[in-house]
Image (cartoon, rainbow, N blue to C red; front, side, top):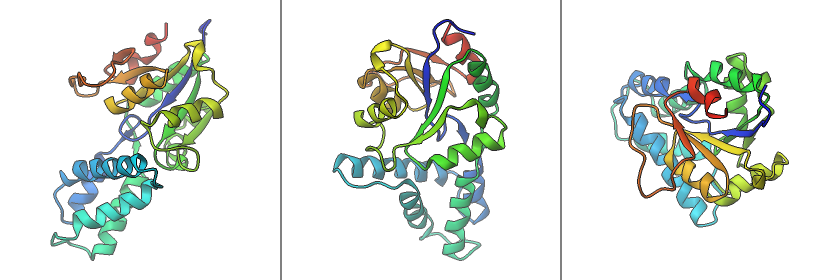
Length: 225
């Protein structure tokens, strides 16, 4: 058990979740599986645009509309409505990356407080961790929906701190994420941040740098020692 437990917020989509089955779903309905990446990026793009204009952004509503747009001009194996439903169902039922559960357990054993923090619905994260048998390791499942603008808006991180009773001045509040834009937002809001560099990528120079980086969740516990 660590002598200095931290409050750790985990991004959900792609940080915890393996979105490979979403590509499989695009392929199964008759589209190119590579569309999954551009589709997910379009969700973030539109959510960020709505947030920047102080408009409401609902993750699943954007995801559904953009799936329909991505599939609408393709000759599919299913009716369009069914194909969209298949993609959204696949996205809503993805599993964790294989390194996440042991990494979460190691942090729990060190007595850190663990939360998810997503731009999407909190119940998606809760379902994923429950399916993996590690929901009990989490102190809570947070979403920006109904509370703040989307990450990486400063208010999204500040809201998470407020809702969890965390003082950022204690230097023990962290975000863990695979997305550099999320790392940048957390650092700008005064948190510490750990970049999960899946795939040996280069961190963008135009963003605030992470506190540290790891290549997988297996390395996370040692980052807090």
